[in-house]
Length: 160
Image (cartoon, rainbow, N blue to C red):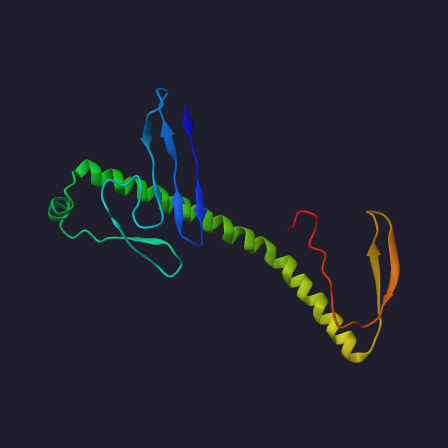
């Protein structure tokens, strides 16, 4: 059985990656980060996080010297690098997903801003606005809207 658990806590920049377990219950690979050290890494290759909270990697100029100083093997280093590569891929997918979600919302936000600007212009002119409210898909009601100091936007039922 394989269990995949992925969690990113953006405030503390902690990441828990996929943990795979064999049928006998032993864990094949587990990785996580946060707090002081990085769990699941045999070699400490993590540097300071950047301003966005993304952990940086140490630059290894001389691999042999680095392994000797850490008291690790090449296999340990490669395992740690693979774990971090998986984490960076996960962060990249999450950032792309967030960017895509935001870019899909931009047209609706622009329409809302246009409506608000129209309402502000009508308010300054002291005009009432004649509009049609959508009651159902095929039923509309005509209404006169007086100038107000505030506007309420319906975000939808799925917004919390």
